[in-house]
Structures are given as C-alpha cells and as structure tokens.
Length: 116
Image 1: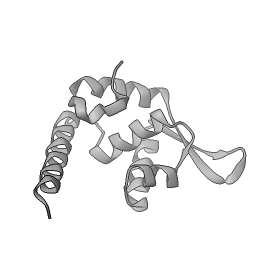
Image 2: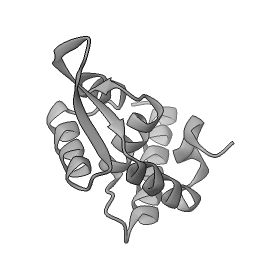
Image 3: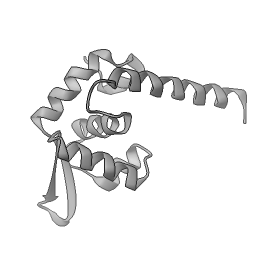
C-alpha cells in the first residue's frame, strides 16, 4: 500500500470516530445516520441505490433502514411506477433528527449535506 492511501484510510477512520462521538447519546449509529442523510438528499431512493451509493453491504443497509423505520425516521413504500420496488423517504421526525445532530458533526462529514 502506498503512503497516501494509508493516510486516506487513517483520515476516514478518524472521521468515522468523530461522527460516532457526535452521535453518542442519540438513537443514531454511524450507519443509520449515513442512511438517513442519504435518503434525505435522495428521496425515493431504493434499498439497492442506498447500499450502492454508500458502499455498504445490502444486509447492513437493510438493518440500518429497519431501525430507522422502527424509530419512525424513515418511511418505506412501494414505488407507484414499479410495485416490486420499495422506495425510501425521510419522515418529519427524521428531518428533525438530522437537523438536531448536524451542528455536532465535523464539517467533512456533512460534505454537500451541510448547512448552506
């Protein structure tokens, strides 16, 4: 492995730890937060879209979304155009949860999802 790659991996691990620290005391894990933030910025995303875009194993994405649905932070529904496809949308409580944790998150974690 080259040194720049090792530095990138170290930075990613440090960022994940900082996000986990910011989420401590909430009902959100890093995976749940990632899923919630993605769905908030991509309403109507499917589970496949979510897992692919977040580079997350489908089972991990499914568990995270199940927890978000149980917490009433995300809604799952059938796509009216293709009733075999399940789509995801953030609930008002989910949007409020994102807004509540955003100030505590490190700026790089927000990327394009941060406050404007």
